[in-house]
Image (cartoon, rainbow, N blue to C red; front, side, top):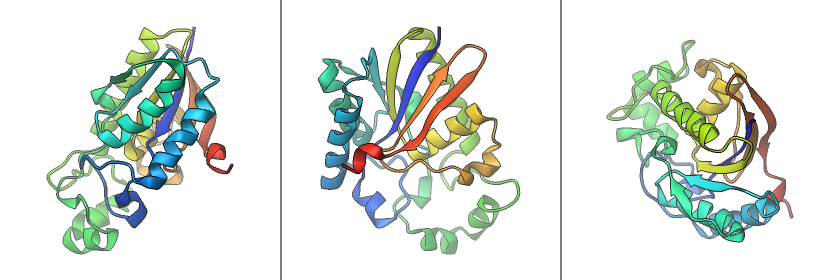
Amino acid sequence: MPVQLFLVRHGETESNRAGLALGRADLPLNEHGRWQAQRLAEALAAERLAAVYSSPLSRALHTAREIAAPHGLEVREEDGLIELDIGEAEGLTFTEVRERFPELAQNWGGPQGPAFQMMPGGERLVDVQARAWQAVQSLAARHAGERVCAVAHNFVILSVLCFALGISLANFRRLRHSVAAVAVMDVRRDRVRIQRLNDTCHLER
């Protein structure tokens, strides 16, 4: 039996709003992000979730707790869902990243893409994909035949979707998963079926 996985990106933070690079910095949701978390909770209230998992970062945990509350569930932290460690790029504008780390910017946009590019003082996207997909498989093994929500981050979700769709990480920028958006996947042992991508309908009410 497949697990139906609701893969949710956390609500907005001030860094998201300002367009700053955001990795492991443990920033809270801003006012709009808290509103988004409430809308997510309303949208997923009827889904009969068996469990809600979250990255250990506070912006994800806050979002996950809002989603879990209507189901009477406690949020379970999952380290594999934590965001890409972007190291010295944390908090910079994208212009500042290009100026301070020109080789990174060149390689990130090159034909091989970012998969094996080490962030300055951080980690590689390929390593994020490996741990995030392992987390997805672990959730699927624990919750066969159930519906589960996992609240995570931009690079985590995009790397998982690339794996599920058979897309090279070099092309991850062809996908988009907005703040507070939902993707839905049926995860089986031998295959994955994508049901929804970048769903933000709940934010349009």
